[in-house]
Image (cartoon, rainbow, N blue to C red; front, top):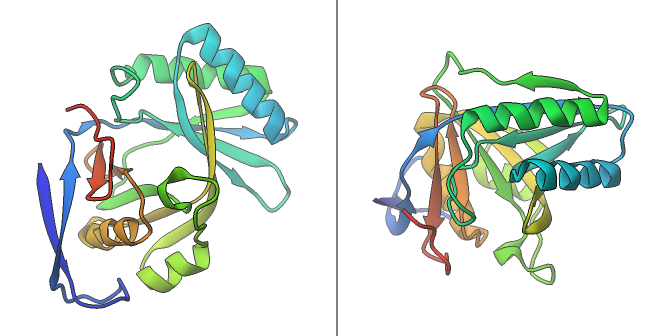
Length: 219
């Protein structure tokens, strides 16, 4: 599916749209998300635990870390809708991985629930084209581009699977579904090859690929 958006200004908080941009939206999947609140395990040990679990369960963790004021952190992961590394994991496997991670880290597990408001969430990487030597954007830039009608949380992508691991500075963007097009345009401007949109109201998630994506996912 292709979506066409128009923009008129460098500032993405503008409500008028003019210039055309193309995005590929992939088929939605049923949404699931959970997190483990971790207090007595550092990030390096968490990644080791994720590696052990992924080898044991053959499960891909696609998630992110949010560090709290007391230096403890939450590790979120979702039923990531990308199919590059095989079929999307069944929700039952996500639940089992969440329980296992909580046990292995002596943490507290939480399953997220559907929102009663039309909200979306996007985990947006801040490094252009995934390459470590490329430009790294900031949460302040995201704020300046989007304006004040979104909730932004500083995060770190932390995905681990049988294929290895990947980390990257990121921001979690949550807002009104009616404003999602602004995040599409931001991802394009920041040269992000893809991102997942979580529809927290309708319980669906799907991948989006801007025109700069060089390795499109399978349908």
